[in-house]
Image: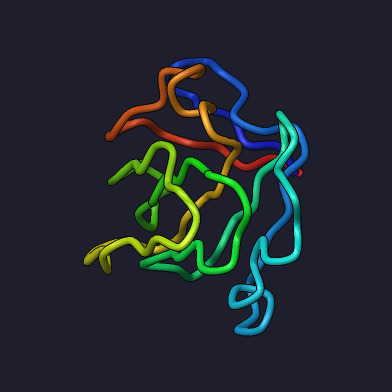
Length: 114
């Protein structure tokens, strides 16, 4: 799947996967040594994330039901946890620096393409 920021006309990820089951969301990126540029993981549903036992930092964009960015967490380091986000529906985990590179900000509209 591809993730495109329609507001900024920028590709967020060219190779995204989705974690929609309880177990796939719980495991998330655990066991990976990195996320390559262009990769992403969509967690749906998701109102908070953690980086317990991860070995690298990530950017996180939280989305509402319409896939609008409602919160961003740039460079979330290992062994951290986000607050629970009321009104959030899903989260996209990205390589560190992706949000800054693409200019992604709160209010941006994301599109998911197969």
